[in-house]
Image: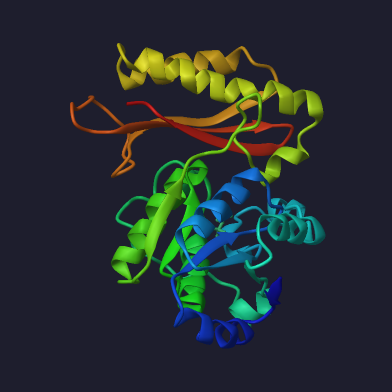
Length: 281
Ligand code: PAF
């Protein structure tokens, strides 16, 4: 497996390959799990070359402690990648290589997509995501880039980024991969104690039940039902629940026949922030 630790080395290595078939990028922050594996497999099945980036991006963390506690698993990550394909190219730059002396996000106008849900609770988070993703797109110049629907708002923001910056890359959203109990796969799950991790399957079960309720009730009633379900669950603190239009991410006031909606949720358990979402129609 080939590992590049600087932008320059990667660019040099890619020069020859890009002339020869399509190139995919799978951006990650490491601590890889089966959700990432599914992105890599999808990328491999659709492209001639695949780059996976591993970079814990400081400018998207509004909480210092979350950044410090973010799991790092270099050896396991390389083993997982090599097990999928030894041809995958790994890009693992340092913070200095990416940001030089200025570890600050750029500021974007995402047309309000960044003002709701995750954006409302995490200052500058999406400016940080936009900054690193735009930098990776510039360095790698991929034909396609792969993002999980678990971070559905991030996926919509990356689609907007590409539009406003005119970046010639196709953005592919990939379905959420879940643990056996329904908990959405996340690098943060391993910070949960085993009993709480098991009980956390409740989050997905609640969203599934909400989907049924949303079939006959309006968004407000459905959200109230979800809040009620969480108030009965000790140790799971709901930060927000929203039902939003998938295009604009604005909260649904009145259902429209041809619009598509998703329920979005953020929950704290044992100090770990878990997010999930589900298509409702
Ligand atoms: O989803 C993530 O892991 C990160 O937000 C990303 C897209 C790799 C940017 O740092």
